[in-house]
Image (spheres, rainbow, N blue to C red):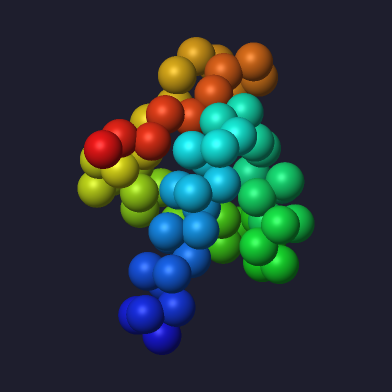
Length: 66
């Protein structure tokens, strides 16, 4: 299970690197998981310092940290 979560996090980061304006709903559709699961992964990635939101919820974008 831990490996699957790591793989999912990497996929989220890869998608957001290529398309920083993707919505949680769009990420969920592409990954085949629920928006809630994506939201939890994003919260974890933000807490770990891998991801941050630039601008407002509507009109902003994601920045993947190195």
